[in-house]
Amino acid sequence: MIERFSLNSFKFFYYAAMYGSVTIASKKLFVTQGAVSKQIRNLEEGLEIQLFDRKSKKLTLTKEGLNLFNSCQDAFNKLDICLVDLKNRNIQNKTNLVLSCEPTFCMKWLIPKLNIFDDLGFDFDITILTHQDVPDFKKYNIDIAIQRNDIEFSKNLHTYKLIDDIMFIVKNPNSSRNNIAISSSIPNLWNNLLSRSETKELVIGHKKIELEYLYLCIEAAISGNAITATSGFLIENELKNNILVSATTPYHDDFSYYLISHDSISEDPRKILFKDWLTNELKISLENLKNM
Image (cartoon, rainbow, N blue to C red; front, side, top):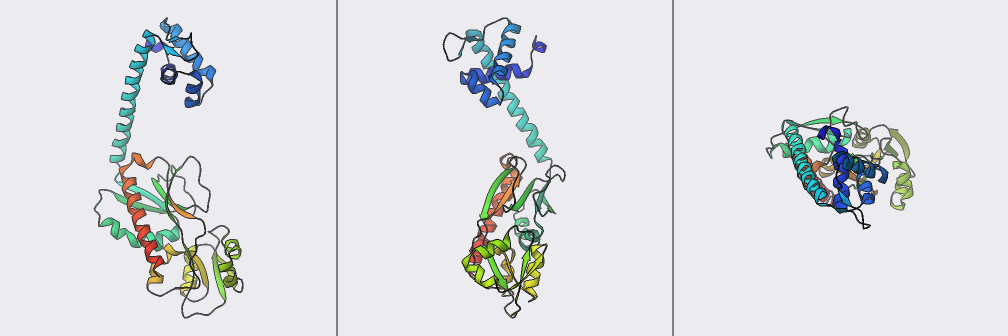
């Protein structure tokens, strides 16, 4: 007999019974009210029983309907448990957490910190890929990505704010060249500098040199060829060792670092562990930057 019915028939009936309303069920299922009503009607006709008492505005289950609802509830709960178990088994079989991040963040912040992560002794390895923008998760088999939100994130991705960025304008303490290196990888960076009174006066008199990657701008500053504007997280060691010095008061540019995942990280213990570690280390870096 079951072969006569689709799983949707039972699912639509279950939602209508749970909420006591075809209208609410249709909204929860993202289908029309007519589609829900049709599936329930097909189920009643096929079973040759009445599932709802339709005398009142609110749907009320008949004795037979209540029996079917309890069976559906048990079946769907078991199905959910089975699906979670299958997914967890698949996760447990994956020994590598594949991470993507912007090249400069990878070189200047993440890689120097990985020894701290390794010392924690987690039972999975990290594979790092670099992408300037948000990557294609499926194409490159990526689990998570670290990205500043100065570019648009797709709405179907799960995003988790890590920390607000803090921007520095820095220079080689022994250089007096009148150049400023600007990275084209940060949208509207130059316009943002000109829109802020605390940075406009500093940069307006400098000759602008545009470079593609932020690490090239940092290298230009280290070599003494130019000053540059960059995230403080990317020059933590240079500031600490006085290789670079701040040319003005650090400022927030209204952007933040985010962890991005194609799926919810709550379903993957590796992602949760890495997110917690990442957040803690970024907070430590921020405190260090505030004291420089």
